[in-house]
Length: 130
Image 1 (tube, rainbow, N blue to C red):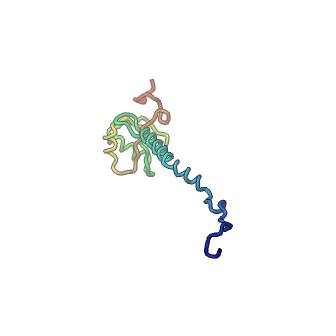
Image 2: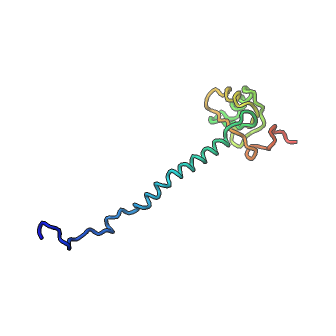
Image 3: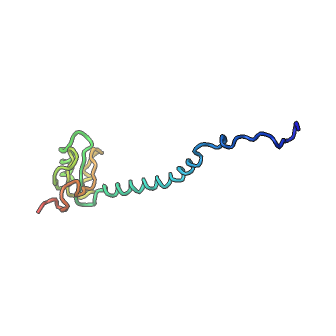
């Protein structure tokens, strides 16, 4: 049988034609949306915990070498009460209105976040120990 099909024709080895990791790649691709959703949820929780309150205790962290003097001047010009130094070099814990404090920041060289009691002093909202 020259032109026809022979029943004894050699077939390709099936083991060599299977792509390695084909099944596991499909498995990883199906986990990607779940992993991204988990990362988005973690980022949202961290962002909400660091968002400064409308009024109350806030942590002001300088991003430049100007340090505490720039932060103190900015906080006082925003009508904030200085409570003490924060956990980072040059940072201060203040009590005040977020809108007034953010309005006093002239450039993006100070970050204002919430001041959690665990990292920034006592749980008393006034910051004054009894």
